[in-house]
Length: 308
Image 1: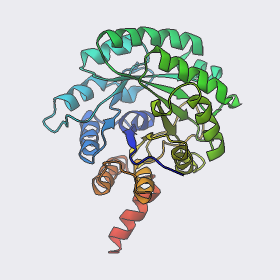
Image 2 (image 1 turned 90 degrees about the horizontal axis):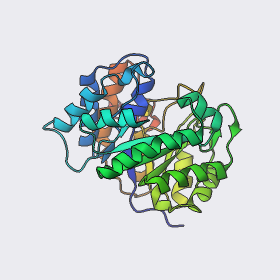
Image 3 (image 1 turned 90 degrees about the vertical axis):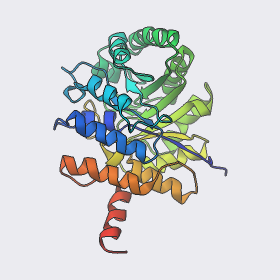
């Protein structure tokens, strides 16, 4: 078995993680978190979401955060700061704030698509076509997400062929990469591999990424199963922040600290410094008034405190 020699991590904590926090996090804290993550060596940090503040109040400061990050003297040129843009209105607002990469999200489940963005899968893809056309004209990269790639909170198990069809459509529309989401964290190594195999039959494996939630504690096992198939890009969230407002009981994305610990143990390069990563996790967890959800972070910090 040959695993990838290097893995790229896409940090989604500042957006996908914080958007589910009821406690409003000030822009200054978000900016500091993003800069700490960049300093830790993460090369892609999903910064914010250009959605209606009516539906996602946590992201109301999207333009302020993005402008500050891009203008900061601490900004690192090799780091990308993608933002989520669900429609053309969001794309235009992101563009005005200086966005240089955007992301769009579809679903493999019709019911989830209706609950999440109030339209069918087909209708959502039509909306995204306008975003992709506008982005292409400006040479702005677009990343795609497929939610509920393994299972749906309303429909149960999702046919891998459905996930593959949506992933292929996003890829053919112009997304340079498609992130496959186990949104409710119900996947197991077997079901995740079935999803990846179905998708890899329709588009190149090096254009696919994994986005796994840890509801049942399977995210790390699912990442390893994905590595076995050659996947080398994964989304993760500092301190395990996150959840899904449309999936009761779903916990956060797999913690970045846990993924880095796994990959270090496999001698797979990430470019991430664990000490700085731990500090970033402590920073945001401390602000939120709780411990990091990352098991690796807790263990490493406990050893440090015990003088081990």
